[in-house]
Structures are given as C-alpha cells and as structure tokens.
Length: 278
Image (cartoon, rainbow, N blue to C red; front, side, top):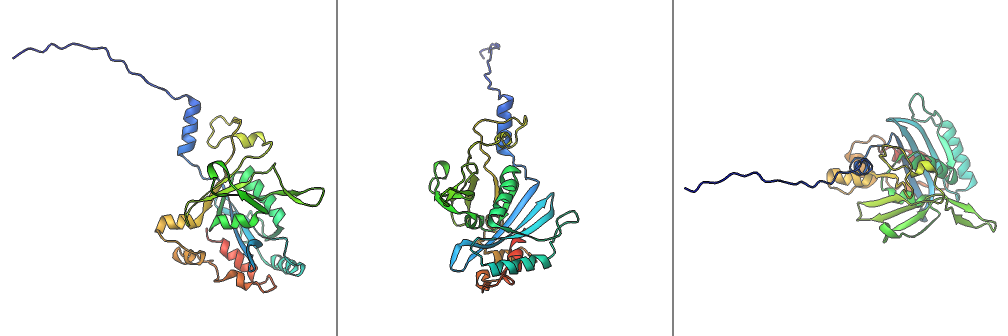
C-alpha cells in the first residue's frame, strides 16, 4: 500500500470582532427589560361619536404596587356631569398601596396628557391597555397618514397648543404616536421624534455608557393586552370575555357606552373596573 506523508499546513483564520459599542447595541435589541413604572389606561367614547373621549381612567404602578389612580374627561363633558364626577371622586377611596395617593384624582384631558407625557415618554414607563390603539386615538386631537416605517398606518397628534387666532395646532416639541395594524389582533405602536429633544431623551435603551446618541428617538413601551390574550390562548377576546377567561375579579359590564344617560354616577365606577384588567 502506498505510504501517506503527513505534512503540516499553515491555516489562516479571519475574524471580525465587534466593538464594545456595537455589542451594547446588539444587546439592547435582543433583550428587553421591563420598565419599573407602568401606566394602565382605559377610555370610553361618546355613544354618538365612539372615537371622541367621554371619560377615561388610569393607574400608575411602580415596582408592582399601585401608587395612584384617577379619572379624566373630555372637553365636551357638560358642567353638570363634571360636578357629578367631582362628587364621585370625593367619595371614592383609591385602591393604592400604603405609600400611594389615597384620593382618586380627576383630571381634564389636557392635564392627563401632561401626565402621560411625563410617564410614557420622559420616564419611559410601560403603557398598558386592552385594545390600546383605540384608547390612544381617543386621546388625540387630530390624525394624519403615517410615513416611513409606519406607512399605511396613521399618526396621532396628542399634544397641541392654541395659536393667536384661537386655533388648535400640533405641538412639534412633543412626539406623535404612530400606529400600524398588522391584523385585527396586532398593531405596531411607537413615538415619533420631536423638535429639540432633551439630552436624556437621546440615550438609547440598554445603553451601557448612558451617553446621548444624536438622532436617536425613543420608540416608547406599549403593551396591548388584547394581543397578549390572543398570544396565550389563540382566541380573540372582547374585554369582558378576556376578564372572564383569565379570572379577573373587576371586569366590565356589557355596553358601557349605553350606561351614559346624562350622568356620570354609573359610568365612572364602570370605567375604573374596565381598567383593572392587569
């Protein structure tokens, strides 16, 4: 048999090491850390105009503990109904932790939007709701077709100002919210960029250095419980059915909007119950 000569051969290996900055960016894409703060919202539209805000409720949760809850209302609410709401919140005790706010708060839509901006955008809290795009659209004063990545969806203007002629204009120093439906169960939701962002707004999520990155825009943290319920069960739920399926004690009543008959005494507690699916 022929003999085989064993020889050594030089081998070259080409590698492409990732710099530390790229490693941090990849880590931020792969792993999502749940924010410590959560803002839970629920809204009810007017019976004659379902997309117009009638009344809403919210919870603020920090480290798993509810620290504040409140109601907010749209600008078209009659003064008599606002007085009823004030009486309701004065008689209602907030379901908060020992260190939380004990009184249920009552805010106007504009006051709530300031709270929403401070928590959802500046503090980067997680915004939670059931069928969240509907609730976000009720907070908006106007909408437009979305562009870029969200083309085919819509862009909501939540924050506005009144110009010298008394007209409501979009506030360019506040972000818009873009929504694009994938199907009836899923939607992409994100903040847009805003004019003159603060330096802390330019710090990317998951940044190890904590340094601002020019051009970065915080997309927000949005969680639609309707999507989560479908992912867990492969069933499309209404809020009422989801509460029943997951054993939620504080559910919702059928036909919430029909409860509105010129008074807030019945719809306010119902709205608070709807929001408690968490």
